Length: 280
Image (cartoon, rainbow, N blue to C red; front, top):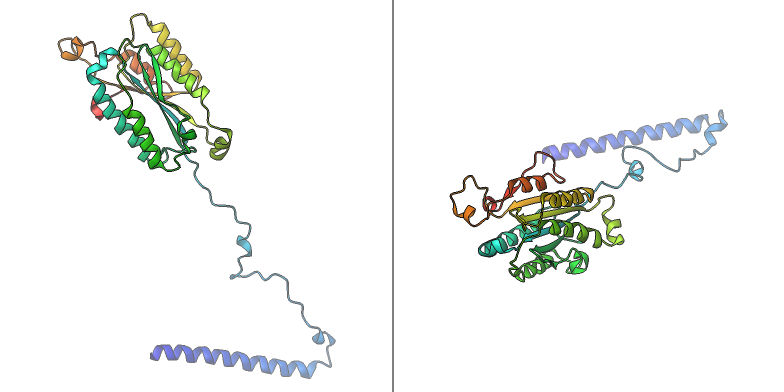
């Protein structure tokens, strides 16, 4: 309390001293007014006062920078050919966890100005149970939870196809789907200058029907590269290191040459394919 009172006293003292000095100055001015006519002129204060308490310097400050959202168009392509009959349920469980993980990851969550997801099944037929333009281009439902529930329902509808696998046709179909289902211009304007990146997550073993040649696959890979697509291949089974095992006997050993070729599309020469079991 004593300190507080001392501070108040000091402030009053300083104010009184300043008042006295101003009074003496006025008296002196009155005494010399007759000698100097300029003293009778009233000073005109400036229109704008600039000082340490002025905010004028901040009036034209630029808007804070906001990082653009990461816009991706992702197609998950699932090989549903006959050799995966006994693996279908496991592939669906992996797929469900994968799309949930995408939806919960910052900067790539689902939304019209963020990530759109398409689902494709392929064997001798090619189906799109979920298009990139679904949910009104991922704007309705407006919540991420609502979109994830809709995607989950689409996964639940995926049945097993069977028959042979035509990987080249599946790869070509992804390029066509990206081109045929672009985002509306209004949404593109919202996410400018970010350009949506096309990505294919491919669940397969790289095997195809005997009629599909390496030249067919190479031609499809060239089409992916020309379209600027990034490919992330995921092998359904682990790489085989010998012929005396169940996977080899079932014809499920991944074609590592084709999978590694696909892994380099949009990701660089050092990229390799992943294995579903190692991430299951």
